[in-house]
Image (cartoon, rainbow, N blue to C red):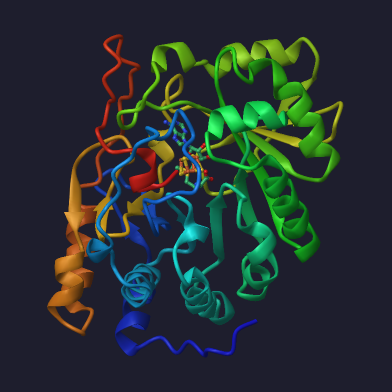
Amino acid sequence: MNSLVNTPSPAARLIADQGPMIDPFGRAVTYLRVSVTDRCDFRCTYCMAENMTFLPKKDLLTLEELDRLCSAFIAKGVRKLRLTGGEPLVRKNIMFLVRALGRHIEAGTLEELTLTTNGSQLARYADELYDCGVRRINVSLDTLNAEKFQAITRWGNFDKVMEGIEAAQKAGLKIKLNAVALKGFNDHEIPEMLRFAHGRGMDLTVIETMPMGEIDEDRTDQYMPLSDLRQNLEQEFTLAEIPYKTGGPARYVEVAETGGRLGFITPMTHNFCESCNRVRLTCTGTLYMCLGQNDAADLRTALRASPDDGYLSAAIDEAITRKPKGHDFIIDRNNRPAVARHMSVTGG
Ligand code: SAM
Ligand code: SF4
């Protein structure tokens, strides 16, 4: 565990004592997702075009600035923090940030520090992540077939990801596998993935593909409603609803045959916004109050305006007053994305 000691300032304690941030619809905002980079070593076909233009490096917040921003949110009642991207583990010196944030776990002001990763760098970082206070991670994996893996990620290496998963489990990290359900690609493979995950003590969550950013493919071809997938699974498995919650949008069932958990994230067929507790920060300091809306708040200016957190705190409060009721994704027949930015900008 890291040796940095976290002594919250009197101002931070005061804010924390006031309780969590509450949005206009009465929802407590306790979960921050941070996209630490929009870059990635994969090019998953549903997520990115092969020839992506990324942000100029000079536009990125430094890791110290990201730490300050995250710490301000924690002082305002955020209890769960997820690092994502792009691929969070390809950001240079990323463990500096993970270790810095780990001090809030040590101090008890943050309940969970976690990340979503494609697994490519896990073999290298698993032990250090555990040492920094990370206990659970999400690994995105859409297929167990190495050739299909290559096709869907374009640039990924299946064996490296498998090594990463093994290393993470060995380090003591609990893993949830995330698979985007893609019609005609992996829908028939989900039973095998379920057995694979549950056989190794991992949960599995399936996700509906969302219309975010221009990609090279047609989303109407890829989209698979999870209600259909569930019906197919029920031919083979007994699924029982359970109240299990991880603080995210997944709804879980227990699979009697495997004894493991299966989660469904259904932004398209079932709008999960009524219980939304999340906001999303990009690597340039833009705060999106909803994954599926364009409204955003610029926190970078407030952050850089003063070394004191007063402006920043006020800017965060103002942003929360603009958190919308929800999103309204539809897969457009003209193949236009519902929001122009890619998932890698706001993070999954
Ligand atoms: N690179 C990391 C990874 O793949 O886990 C973190 C970022 S990635 C954007 C986070 C999650 O979003 C992944 O599970 C990915 O499969 C999912 N994702 C990306 N584009 C998506 C889309 N258009 N619809 C639904 N899920 C998407
Ligand atoms: Fe990269 Fe994750 Fe997007 Fe795949 S889903 S391209 S791994 S950011």
